[in-house]
Length: 557
Image (cartoon, rainbow, N blue to C red; front, side, top):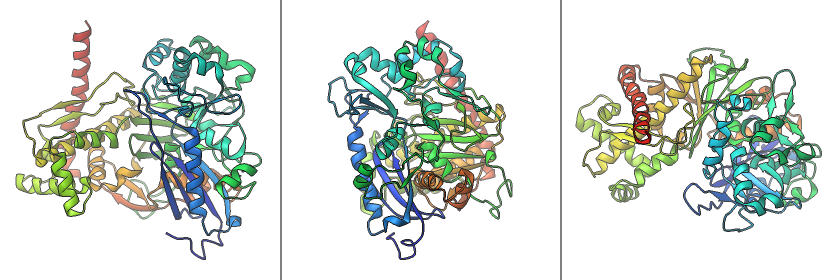
């Protein structure tokens, strides 16, 4: 969408999202409408298995390109604020703020250990073995995707880089620093990924005993200056706004409001959870925000919900006070690979080439081609729903370990019921079973949250996988819950823009901005006739992980 005369005279905000493989920006109106957007790919280095690295310099340069693109033709005076979100990747800078390498090969520009990097498995096991009290706020077990294991790996494995490092930042905080020159950190990044402590009494601090016990006492020096000692709430204005240098690089005005940043999943949550659902025939006409869960679907998936009280959920990260919405506790479940697993299953099947050629010939994506094919397979099999095609085919989806609710990186994928089929039809059925397994993983997380006291009855979903109607329908059928899709599909970008709106003072609170800038698009409802079938499939699903752990015990005995 090109900027219109109306959009060029109303207050607008910019949201910048640093995802796994691209940087995106959007110009967003004060009602949450995306006026225009832009995207730039970014490089991922994968030098060996489980190692994933990026460049902070490349990422900032791409941020400048996409922001300039969305602001083209728009008076700078109309742009009131900007906000950033990013993956929970670790950025390493020297005292001089130049990149410090995290690569074993030594390339200085590769100074980011990505969120999905699993090099620090030994360090993670060591940290979890301490049973330190801070671990209760990460579901009882620290994830490989959090920052302390990566920091410990760096100290133990790349001593030169560790000694040269002057600043360690979450990627979202790096972007805020580049924009403003402020080394303040987001409460969201620190409580969710660094073990910073915060509660409803106003208590905010690092736990020195944790860093000492895991061998990183050196990070506590100079009032924790290397990892952050000025902590602000998401959406809070960063003093001074855009610096002169960054304003020139971004094509904006010096002093433009910059909101304290968020992790990308949390941005997706605030970009859609505030929508008014009256008139949509959902479980409650005027439900509290705590009855909703945000499902952010992409390479991996995140399950974000909030509660008025502190609810500890085994295997689920949090609760984190005010990490997303001030005054509420945030809990975060997740699946380490979602879209990436579907792609893996499709692309490693013998019929992938045939599928790709058929999709290209019909002008469809491979996913649309599979959805079309599975309908034909259903008709030929005389079953009332595609779900029944997988009666004897079951998958446990943790090809990259389990993030939630088992928090077990050692778990692997499992398939029961394979035959000798190599046709596109057999691939289509395997594709359905893969989506079902991911949906049952979500159900596993929801059930665990419910057991701990959460009361969730509606799913809100955003991200690339929401473009797949079969994926959404299966998730609604398996969970038994309606899935609400936002009017603006790019909720993460809207969420980032909300940070800028809050920082500018256009809205007086995060919740006011969320309500004003979020609207319902459509609702996917569960097929109640499949309830008993999926009850049985879910029972098999749970048996599979039980069996896998039995196999581990046998082989390790």
